[in-house]
Image 1 (cartoon, rainbow, N blue to C red):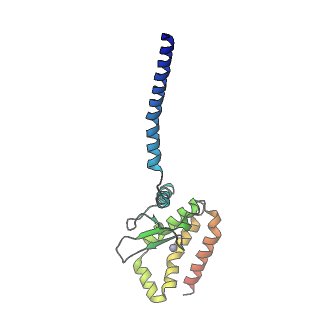
Image 2 (tube, helix red, strand yellow):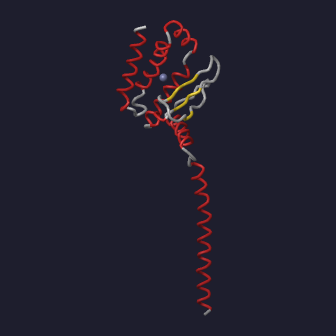
Image 3 (cartoon, rainbow, N blue to C red):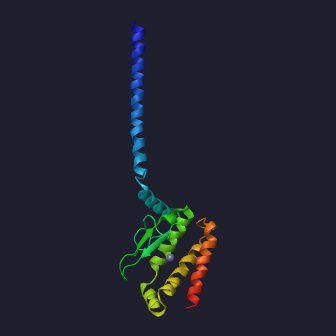
Length: 176
Ligand SMILES: [Zn+2]
């Protein structure tokens, strides 16, 4: 009888230890997961933007905010400049998220070109030739950069479309 009691006690102690070990392990793990897991689509998209900037070493210029996800839009992204001195903001839409290459290329287009362009130059050209031609002037270097970086961003499937847009803006500009 004593043997059986000892055996039962040992089994109970074993399960208590096993349970404790499992409990100790489990909360750490679920904490790590919940701190990484995005709560919604917007948070997920913003995390993806940050990881893409880091992975492809795309720098955010000092005069520009960190790009943020902005939902449904007719473009991939848009850079907004209010006046000459204010910080510019970049809104990124659903169309930029079709692949990591498209997202990287879009972020470089906005941050490395549009965020650094001169408002004086744009307003001067707009006064001389109108908005369409002034905008074409701003888009030429942005699409040229995307075409040039096609390999770096593994974005080859977008090459024809980007080349076509670059050509369209070059034609608009040269026919001014
Ligand atoms: Zn652009």
